[in-house]
Image (tube, rainbow, N blue to C red):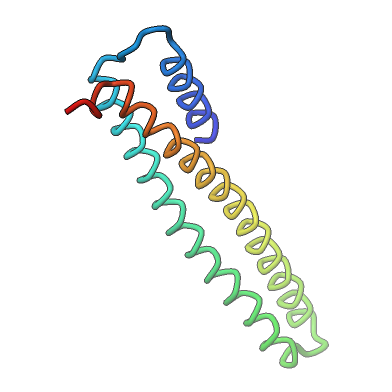
Amino acid sequence: MEKRLKEYEAYATRVLEQDKKDIPKRFWDYHKQKISEFQHERQVHLIIMLFFAVLAIVAVLARIWLLPFFDGSVYGTLLNISSGVLALFLVLLEGAYIRHYFQLENGIQRLYRLTSQVYEKTGNSKK
């Protein structure tokens, strides 16, 4: 997704830097469609990120709450290790989702800055 976002941003910048005074109005429609797609992707990743944040918090709290109940048996040790691995895995996965969402958010903010330029270059401001 990050690659597609950067490719589109580079494409839109190239179109805007053309020598033409006016860019076809269909580019405005295309630009709005691309922003809409990226916004949808951002919303989906926000929901996923929040879901995994809740899972990570539950796993860490369960690990902390259950720690006193682990006895010295083999099963207690196994449960101790597996709950720790699960909590660690979910926390690391959440970190990856936060990084990805951060990249999406910043990319879409850059596209928003291009939007006014696209709007003006497509002749929409002359109406």
